[in-house]
Image (cartoon, rainbow, N blue to C red):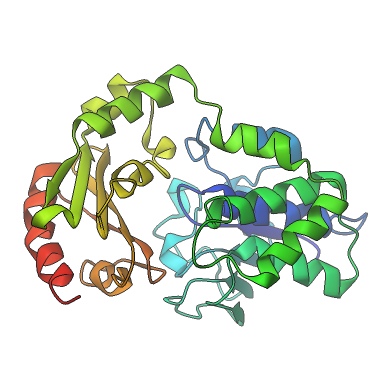
Length: 315
């Protein structure tokens, strides 16, 4: 493997970026030149610092043609890989091997080589242990990236997926140079004005149903663009909805592209959401999942809400 392209899912979050950048840095040698797939418009404002920190070369469509292997990280199915738009509906792998490393229980094992651990807190945790086992040096940059991935996927080590293994990995990454305080500030306490205005939309549009057990919010295309944001900036705003006391099922509907609605599902307490997301051809984790429906925002809300209430009533 001398010319691999490293990739992750569309609209990559911190875990996805951490893995992609760290793997590219770890396998870079004189005779190996990994490039990362990050098409224009993929990077959110909040996570731009991770790309600047990594300083890795980007893959152009021509690099896909020349690649001798692909490494797909934190991605449950091949159709969700974040490849250039012009390659999206092509056989971009064309028989070349795909290495698939992920922690989603809904992973379809689409690679020739698959390592999927649903009990891991994050794919960043898996990559940390992989690099350690492979004897790859983890420099300060890689340690910071991987710590950011674990931190965000555990919501600051506050979710049930926080385990002794994830805490051990985080501790060792700090010893290797990750600045926990700086990363926490960047990830949790730094908002651009446009992201702040988007949060204002989410708060204003939040509605509560089912005796306070279900809450959802929406952001239309015009509202997202009007705040100065794009589809790439939709990430953890669903936490606004989930933060309401008593809410066990939280949903965020966003129309980042006209006529295409993304749904973020979050479950709390006994309520799981991965099976609810699966009803709309989505997937994810037991209590954090998502789906995309190629319909306008309000049409999707009207379609999903009855099923969500029915789902909630099972618990």
